Length: 123
Image (cartoon, helix red, strand yellow):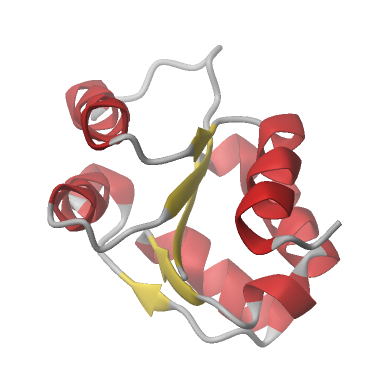
């Protein structure tokens, strides 16, 4: 199972907490991340991650390409809906390709819990 993990700056702490809480299940997966999110996850949880570029430098698009190639099974993208992002078109493209390819997408911790439970039969 290949899971993509992305978090805006304001939500990186929540992503690390989420990954820590699900480390056993996520440790069995191939984790793909954007740059800074992946560094935090690897440094703070010890899990192996496949880091792409940071979101503003094309990481969202790299992961979107993997989704388009059917190489991602689910996406947890903890995004901050209250802060404008300079790379908003890339974010929109990532969300759109998830819809087009019918890839489960969680954009907050509550939906991320359901995604992990559903995809990984953790709970």
